[in-house]
Image 1 (cartoon, rainbow, N blue to C red):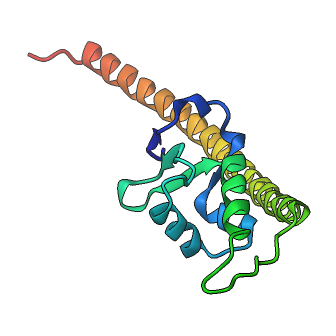
Image 2 (image 1 turned 135 degrees about the horizontal axis):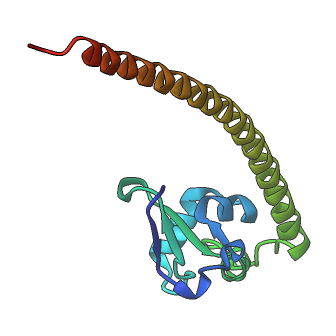
Length: 158
């Protein structure tokens, strides 16, 4: 089981409202490094809600709506020396990206469930075989013990 650290425990049980930083980058149509830069440079970047995985490679989670609000603000800011605002990404584009992301998630998780079901069926078959072999081995052991006991009764030590 992966280690889990809740930084915002109010979201326990509300995991469907969270998104990884990597998925958030995909959702906003930006690179993962851009999200990392935002997190380092902006005090108002949404606070992390959850950390999962081993300490050397933790997966960071934020609240999806908080991230989308922050991303809209950042993406609508003028860049560099330009004085004209950049083209605003319509909310519909962000939502379409979100639908695409979760469609991929549902497919991936559905495939994962199918693989686990196959593995479970195989494991259950092996368990049935092991139980049958255990029963046979116990019966053989009991027969050997009974024979040894009978032999001892028929041939007592002098």
